[in-house]
Length: 286
Image (cartoon, rainbow, N blue to C red; front, side, top):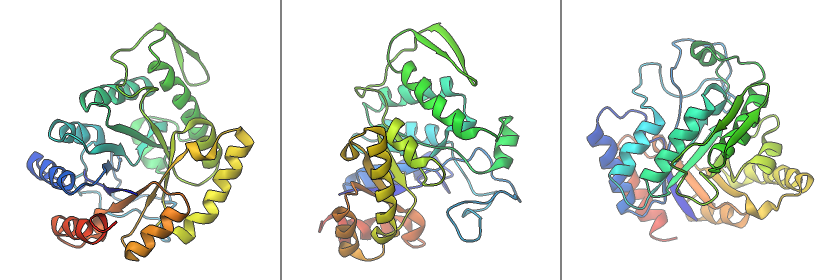
């Protein structure tokens, strides 16, 4: 089992605090560090966050929220082995050509350590502020994933669709990792499993326990069968709330999870102490 931490870009107000946490986690053999993304957080919003009972995401509109790619670039410059992931970036509201360039650049500068976690998005108020239509964001997301892989191919790019008109260019440098930056598709609503089976290298599951994840994996297996995809080629990453100790870790392993991502806010008021305890209690004994 691989272990990661999320989000390393929220609540950070200096380079020293960000890098210090990242280097400490790397020294304790955490495999990966992850970010959240919101370009802005409305003071009030009507959109419903799909992964909480009250429809609200944690944190306030005034909480320091570093841009994920900039934060990960800073971490890449001050670490050597820890992998870097977005968990997740909101692809449907991004410019796909710019994001493809940024992702490839980060992968090169980190020595092939970047994973692009990508989600469709749920916060209409943010799309409105970005000047991007909220409608058809799922179709736009699918199209962007296909188009970005063309940018990473090194070939002359040709891609015309309802959303993109690209022709006659190449984009270098190419990602360091063979095949391009791994794309980790987030969420389990709507057509998520169909997308994972057809377009993703992995799945970022917004669950906290193996029991809740098991029926979702059955849906993913069915989607892979329908798409002619080897289910075992999909790397499964799950959130974990640090409850249940080593028994919980084994339960995740037994159903095929490869990576557990622990939210920093589950580790107590002192995240540095919490990271140390998590390493001692789980990683060192696993």
